Length: 263
Length: 342
Image (cartoon, rainbow over the protein chains, first blue to last red):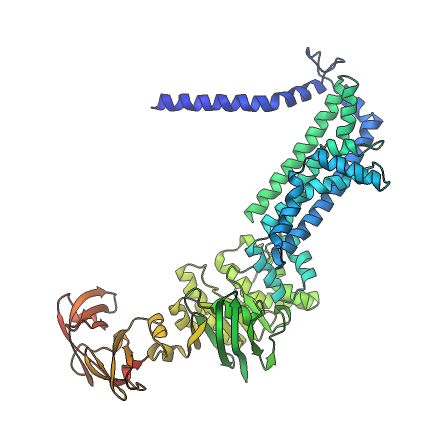
């Protein structure tokens, strides 16, 4: 019995190991060859070096794109969380006709492909004579990320929170004070988590950014450009750095959501 | 001065009526308990008094002022919610002081008042703690302090003891009573537990299906319930039913019994509490003989169920010294004034 059980456990463990390997080997290889001391990010590994990181951080295009990505990520995520929170609060706290329809319309962009959003934005901004710019990218990222922020906020605004808001009103607080002194601080962990989630999605979003930028571009667009020029460990270094930022932000999300759940 | 007046309150949710033409007048600073089963409308009535729900019809007056159209923020009421609804991101003193902060009380005066309020509920020195560090009973006290600090005319308590274990509940009952006496405010407390209601109330309001069945001091409501529902909800009893034989007399399986207010050609009922049935023939009204069907020892007394040959059932109490056993025959009687028409 024990032997059979452990055989099954072993098979399961092996299966899991294969799955994880399948997912993470490409990332591992990317990161490993970013430390290549040779000129090509392919085996054999000549030795470990940080020279490609140095070169990536001295590459003006990469550094500009990094700044742009930070700006686009922060602004679009901030807007997404703000709009998503206000929409969730309104729909959770007021009796408005057609609530279900409004919810569905808010969530709809999640089902629309990024390609369509990107093309649509490009066409409309050209029609308005604005042309491609980071502002358009920010709008695009708000379109795709706001539904997520809305969903996260909505999940936090239940009956228990409503009674807490009622308690504040009972003590004399108006709606404005309730929202800013009670509701928002109360669900702050979820708001931070939503912001971080939107940020990571914006951080490595390529299609919308590619279609709607020309000279000022974001990191994924620059990297795609670099790759077109051939394989180079500098690209690996930039990619590894993007990966590091993403997983750090995700770790923050996890931390805040867990704290939110505990309270 | 009449303190709280509810006039013909009706509350409709679609086609269902949570409250049907409810009127209630509370004089002075009573401890009022709204008692009833779930769905009886007691919580809805509390919500209407607090201003959280606008009634479909009717008016609410508090301390002589019509407050029907005033929201909870500007009503002279404060509420202790069932789950306490404390602000999770604030410390104990920030929670308690929030109402004063909204009233623009300057920080030093606020701190002094908060300290006094915390002392009053037995939480002196807990000001800097977070809400998550508190036990259920402590949270309850914070909720009380937070509501009482704004000096409401009426303190509303929505099943405040529901989440506490039995010992703590008893202790909090005593503390609530002491707080009510000390602050001299009117408390309106919602519960479905009749023991809790009797322990706390100076006025019990029994509710059922959106109506008030009975309202009055607990001793009166228990001993002389106005309706059959109240009689059953407030404890055990034996009911005798029968046709009206003559004005003020009904013919029941145990014989003719007095029933003040019984009119001709109608079925009427009187009830009697278990402790008022005598197991001898010494009472003014004989109730015949009955055989014990079940006797349950309860410590201070036996709870005895008996049945007469006519099928009439009895629910009575006997002292432990009587040592009642199933199958024994009892001779029963009672006094006329213990028979309550319902």
